Image (cartoon, rainbow, N blue to C red; front, side, top):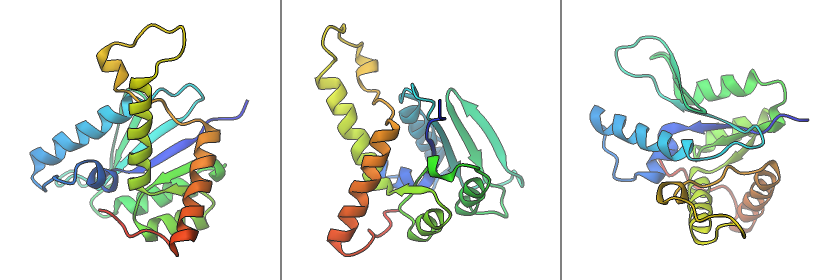
Length: 186
């Protein structure tokens, strides 16, 4: 059985889409990071998908920091390394890069990740699809299943490998129709 997709998330980039009101105060950033992690923790990983969220290093730590919250691995780059560089280092360190999906709207990061063999999706598109899935999950429970509790209905399911492949194909087609890649959102 093959391993599931590994989703590498450019944390602050995705937060810029999910929380456009985000300021730069430390308490606001901590709250926003917690919001993002909670959103991702709601994603079931039935096919072995894993999520790694990468943030730029926290001031004062001087070294990278890594922690796990549930099924989500959170990595802060050290102060001398940008999160983008850490994402690329993770891509380079992966044996089977075709199973990687990098979530970012940073054109340079996405281009390099694709050049290295990873698939990419913009933060805007990833957020939009998650919202659609969450709305669909809340509206239409599976036949014969008990209605989910209120908190559970807000949790979107994790994308399957087939869905990720479909997303990538749709993104490429949309970029071709629009005449190039989208501008970064954050």
